[in-house]
Length: 351
Image (cartoon, rainbow, N blue to C red; front, side, top):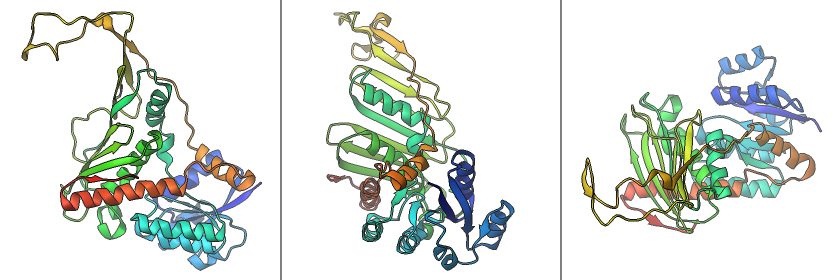
């Protein structure tokens, strides 16, 4: 079944959605876009799209049954509700809202109208994340207990409207929502405690260099770090498991797994081992025969699967992959992380 699609917001992310759908999803007919900026409407026209002169014109267009919202974060709630009430199915950019209470309002309207509502958590299809998720699922190096996830840059302050609190800017709502969503998607267990260190290195309005800490009911401890002022990067992923360690260095997915070799025995020496750091037994290197280096698993995620799933839900009642209820869990965690920074303490929870 062909679906007619329109965009609200034709900036960087709006242009990204348009290009990707044009390349990968011919079954979606892109009709037009609305943006409050005349230059953005002109850009849409130059690509052959119809430029709606007002939001009301788009909402009244009976041909359009699917809308993607790609505007600053503080407009997500109101636009989502308006589109749902106008009979449109909605895909909203992340973060879906500024807090959990706003998302609960949208979910209520989605249920009332019977229209689809989903969030564009596209980084569930990132290759590095899919590799880590596959390692956890396979159990090839045992059960994870420490997982570290990092994105690190060195270009300084947040760009454009993301550097303004009124627009819902800041690193926790920009990248944090991705990294936390990945953790909560991968780890099938409630979050039982959170703590945040949200630094404002380049200004006083929004957090721009942050670390957040999550503990899950099954015992996994997760660290998510996002930096705009890092000049020597740590690995994108570092995961400690009961039978080995996995490392992914960067988005190119270079990395490895080191697994315990259960065929080789490792005995403790009676004598202290002397290292460059002095005498130690606990931190002395293991015998090389007790370890086995392995390549990372091969995965082939496809970003277009997100929209393919949206179409399958609309056409055949398939199960939605990115559910608003999942996003609500993430937003509840983010609410607590902001509170953690404000009060300088961690919080117990069950989310």
